Length: 90
Image (cartoon, rainbow, N blue to C red):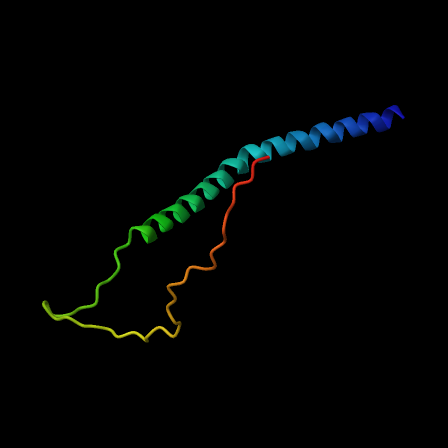
């Protein structure tokens, strides 16, 4: 029974020590990689947001009009049915 406890404690501390060493080695690398990915993503969003749209090349002073299809829906001035409102005192 005591031998099993000693083995368990040995392996527990050995594995925890190895994980501690590996964490000190790989954590900065992983964090730096994650930070670079996030920085690239934010930079891409910033560039996309403030990117100027390309204007079509036209001679100066030329005006073009684009016709659209007329609306198929009939315009209605009516807002709805009028409902009489009475204030009720309790």
